[in-house]
Image (cartoon, rainbow, N blue to C red; front, side, top):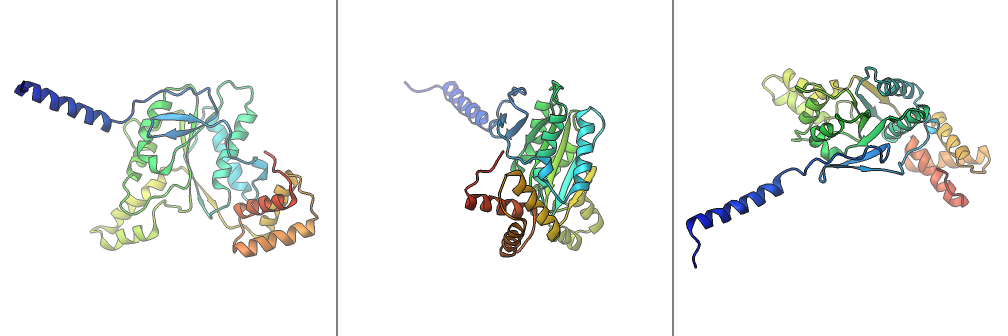
Length: 292
């Protein structure tokens, strides 16, 4: 029995509906915010995945950035208390503890507010999911909690237009940023865009000034710019000494200094990350497990 034109049309409509269903974004499911203090945004699933064991160090172990640490703590404390606070861009030298500081400050604030039954939540959003930021905000804005949305190593390459979504979500959209949300990002670039991308706009645009304004205006959405710069030898050794004492490594100060400087020389750089990598190597050679 042959299909009638109506049956054929219905079959095609069913197939079209199936295809459109696959293309539609996943249904937004409200997460159990009591499950943890830290979450990772899974854009593909449309859910917040709790992180029960956070990869972070104590705030007292982050050396050489005392001024920016204090500014970030103050800004975060105001936000946690329901007072006005700024989005923050932590930019500068690699390995100087930008992302570690964000996670450490979050833990420090919650520890200081231990009696508060609405702890501050930290949500990490991956760089490639920035264009889903409006969806994430629609989930958290109805919560009783306050949220730090955190993107590590945020930057944009050529022909990447997702920065426009971030601009609107942070400050400038009709709805604006929810009162219970603040955005922290780390980057090696102060303006989040490659310098040659900005220079190219300057050389090819009809109105170079307007083109450059468009590119760098993203950074203006961050009220606080906290710069991280390469550390001195003394600061590097202070970081190493702090790690060694914290993890109970029994080694003489002279020997620790000699080995730490040799390690930095072979790496060709000094930073908090290099200090931590040396500490892991030293602890492994000494057979000492690292403490949480």
